[in-house]
Image (cartoon, rainbow, N blue to C red; front, top):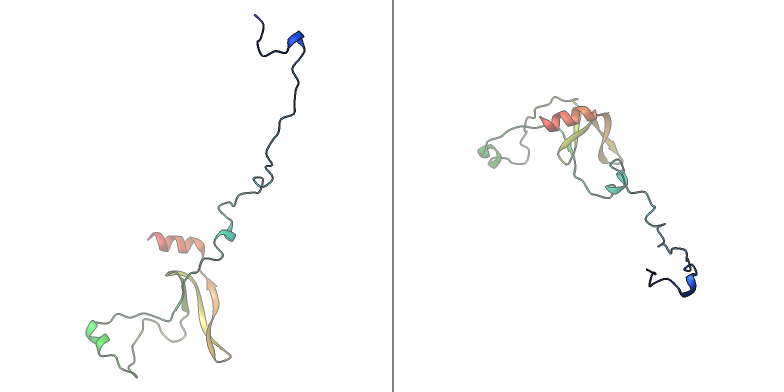
Length: 119
């Protein structure tokens, strides 16, 4: 039985090249798990912690200017640098042009940070 779509006289059908969409934009590499450019503009809270103490609410209510509060660290101990509440580094106080700052003296090892976060 003859093919109804075949041209008359048995001539071969005309072959046209396939038209493909431009995929050059899709060829861009997708960011991987190690691509920090995805998060560089996300704000975080940076906290410098001199020390801590626990007080009763009564003691907090009695705070007045000039009151001294003892902390859990001694003078000269390094400060903690926290990012979103997680310890990132240790440092010391510096003064630059009448502004306080912190000079980083140690970056916490990533394995230590993960262990602290897990436990």
